[in-house]
Amino acid sequence: MQIAHTISEMKTLRSKCTGPVSFVPTMGYLHDGHLELVRRAKKDNPFAVVSIFVNPTQFAPNEDFKTYPRDIDRDLAMLETVKTDIVFIPSPEEMYPEGCNTWVDVEGITATLEGRSRPKHFRGVTTVCNKLFNIVEADSTYFGQKDAQQALVIQKMVADLNMNLKIIVVPTVREKDGLAMSSRNTYLTAEERPSAPVLYKSLQLASGMYEKGERDARKIVAAMTQLISTVPAAKIDYICVSDINTLQDVDTIKGKVVISMAVKLGKPRLIDNIILG
Image 1 (cartoon, rainbow, N blue to C red):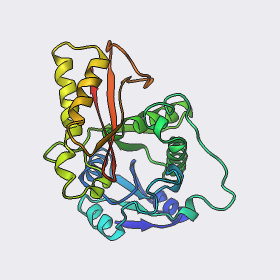
Image 2 (cartoon, rainbow, N blue to C red):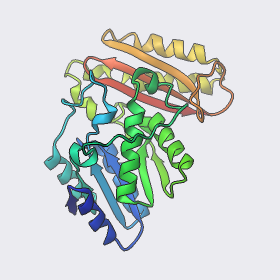
Image 3 (cartoon, rainbow, N blue to C red):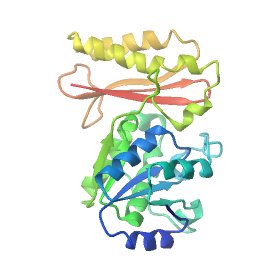
């Protein structure tokens, strides 16, 4: 496994790859959800590149950029186990040198869900992903379904900018009790952690209602809200039933939809989703 800290080092290592390259962008503090992306990347192509970069431009001033969990040595040890070929670990100064004033902004689908709660978040995501895609020059890149809106936004950016890159979305990896794996799960206290699976239980409730014929989105959201509200510490930011392509809210489920949520449980703000139809 080789490590690059600068863009020039990354480009040099990339030039030595003799076959198709897969790419997994991460913010580090890895878990098995990340490793599953790398396993899939290695299965599909002979070379796998992973980036570790806590991107400052996707955090608002009141968010957790400074306290976001970091442990490079731990991450590298984990990446060794899945036979990662190259790890790119740039600094913020390397990615955003002085005078860097260019942004990539996908409109429309970034205005809903996370975009409503976190203005300019996706501008940071799309800009850094565009930069990473240009640096790594991969043939395919891998994202988790847990960040469903992010995956759709990246797909839209790649299509709109005619980028020669295949986007692979891998199913959400969960803990045994259903909680979606996330680096931010480490923020949960010992008292809060047993309550966290209520998010997935509410999604299962929604799926069960749908399977029994319920198509009224408001009734599904109301049932989910009632279940999550049984946890006193849970503060719902949003629960939305959205068209899978536009991410616009729907009142009646007619085609494929994504049910998304963001719930604050103590310090962490947790997100999850399920696709129906």
